[in-house]
Length: 149
Image (cartoon, rainbow, N blue to C red; front, side):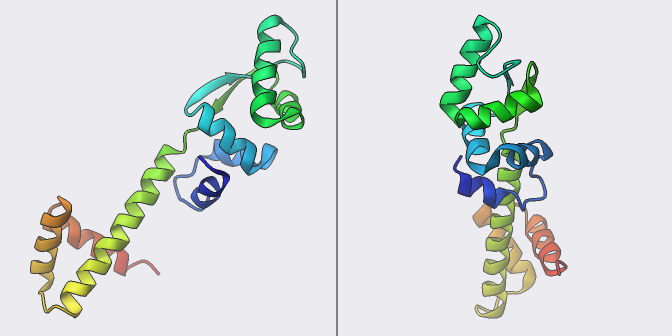
């Protein structure tokens, strides 16, 4: 995930609070790097910078290689000795894809009903077939979209 993609997802209603907390602490770029490397995983953060044990030293080296030493120090300060859950942001990605699909369906529905002369029912049926959804689902998308203001 790029920092730009992560920034774009932040406005989404399903953006995880844990991702926002990470962004606030270590920034977009480092958070994107963690999400790319460890989506939906727990990462052991060393007790202190440099690591206090052999596994800690290994974790420290990996962390520094991924996010840089200054950012790794911040993570040790706030999460040292803990397993940090790194979100995947999958629900936010899915919600964004759903929103894009809904807008496309509504635009297609408007085109069919306003410029091509389809009735609402026939437009919903045609789009339902095209998108693999029921005509009722299409009508629900259109109705929900038309009530958002």
